[in-house]
Length: 234
Image 1: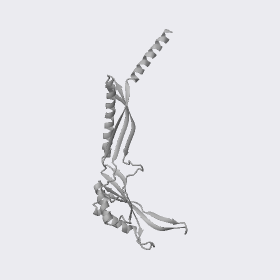
Image 2: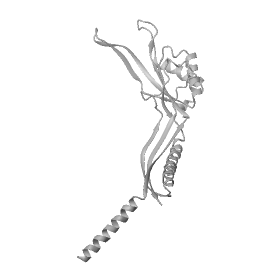
Image 3: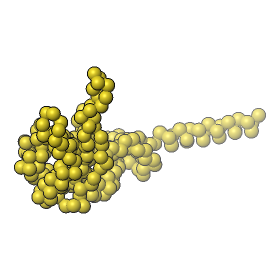
Image 4: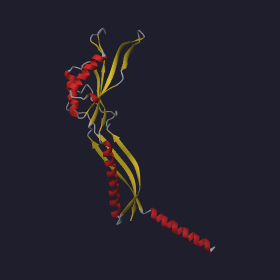
């Protein structure tokens, strides 16, 4: 019976020590956000075949429009390697009365990489001078934003989030007359790399506002990192 009581007392002592150790920690959050101006802006320029008359007798072919568009982009100082061609799409309308498709025409999109809002304005100005916005170009938008050193900035944001967590923990424990010890665990809460910050998830130039070249229409690349860290309390 004595041995049982001693063993029970030892278990209580160990449990008490474990409870005390568990309570000598603090869990805090850390967060860091960085906004980058993109240095690679991908424009999606869509152009279509069209007719010069209402009777659909004379068609301006896709390859002729593409030649004019490529020449205009060269004039705007866009490098050939920064122009990517997409597949060709067939567009058509359905006539319910005649029960057949009509108004067949082809469409294509070019992906064009520029490096600044100023270069976008130059492209728009050149396309307007070549009268390509009037009939040929049906879409002009920013399809993607990139930064060539984004991975380095991601590491920077993670480091700042950890430092923020330590600063938060230190502020709390020092107010209690304690010292913050080593970090025990770190849990990632949220990592976001996002440039789409409007309601429909896109950033764009529409042909309707393309004339206002002072409006860049470019959203920043936002990098956010959030974590939870558990520190010892000394």
